[in-house]
Length: 178
Image (cartoon, rainbow, N blue to C red):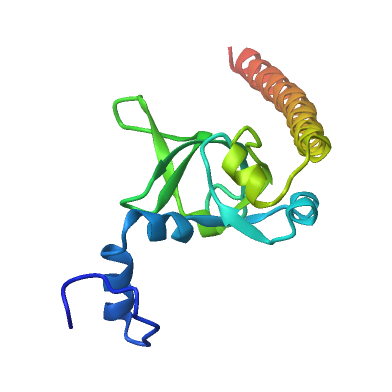
């Protein structure tokens, strides 16, 4: 097996060769490996089901521990084939926050960064379609935020009521013992 990456390489069922192909791939090929699925409304406009991720795209996590969470892509690591999304963090032992590396195949792009001229020229996206993409993404983001806020308020109120009842029961028991 040769040490260099080869564009003539077609396919192999050998996992070792597949890993070698990805590990030694040049930057322009690695970029295509970092593709994610598109939401239905975006896929209609672009006429494709997946695109390479870009910083500034809004993505929703579809699988894994962070499924259902959504945020903006902050950083893309081409060497590790991972994506970092704002708002998806884990607390370290020293109480600082660490961003979580996600595989782009587990993401769905809900709003694209249409400021990139190369991306819009490739798919012949008009100014009207750009505005439509931006508007659709803002509506969905607003709906998600409102739902999270409403759910959070309801749960907090219920927990507070339960805590108050438990505290009252404990106080009555303590008074009876004295």
